Length: 425
Image 1 (cartoon, rainbow, N blue to C red):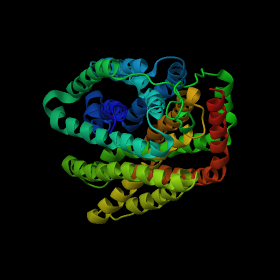
Image 2: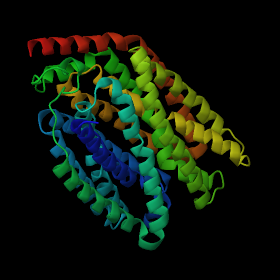
Image 3: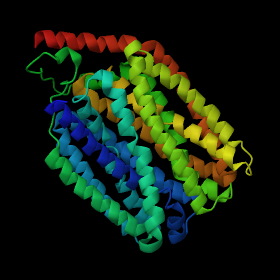
Image 4: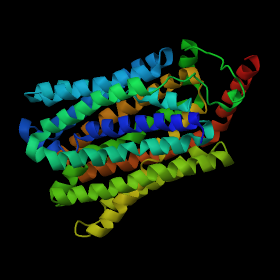
């Protein structure tokens, strides 16, 4: 393995570490829901508003981050995002009341929308045929981060409180900011495109507002935008409310609920890796491969979630098996949607494209915890998760299916453009 190849995997490892601990910090709100609600004496609707507010703030900042990443050095901006993560988490830890907690939790959403720069920069380190497996491995940081956050919550919240846990993850954010600032080099945009493989000098193309606006007229991007809005509903419903559902409606103790979540997270991690590798295999066979994979697997997710939540309370073994199966299915989009975007969008606006995708997804994410809380107050958490999860996954499968029909044409448009740029030099 050459020096350049080794270095790109070092960069990947640094970003994996960033996303792992950042996700742990972001998702701590789930396992710490009970002590936070008890501390501030709030109900499910108020707690859902906390999570939704942070997600909406992140959505607002997605276009800002996307624009900055496509104009300036991405590595330094990612380091800034990591510093903001640590700082805002500390502010959240010292909130004296619910109103302040709501506001400071919202501020943590600023850095939650910083991932498009990571996606864009890594696309210039790894060629198209490898991107699903790279993103599958990177997506594994999400479930592993959840396990890390849950472990910190269970192990430390009793002794140092939920505030102390936030202080620890905030400090990690600042340390990782220094690591990124010192250890990650910028890469020319489009460096890993196959058409540029034999070029000594990569042609430089700057952010183009007209091209960025054209993302909304790209048929494949429109299908991705629509499915992205709905696709995050089940993930957020389960992330923010799974612990409370297990404890209050299925009769699990906190320790038993933690074991169920560990099993689910383990299969979620495996799923990220499997779907990433399988996405690359299918992509090499047909340009429709990644979209087709998402179509089939996402529809299966609706079936498995319905089956899991329909299991009688006393049949815990079957419930665990079906929840694990559902978790295995969830990360198929995380491993394949970003590579699809990079296969249809010019390198100089990929951060913007990813940011717009993230903006739309976060609008959906912002609604999901609140909607679950709203339905739960009127009915139950089981009904809320079931209604939201199954209906949105069916819709996503439909739009992935439409994407499967269209995406080859939009991929060929990009490849033709890259060939023309390589010819001009």
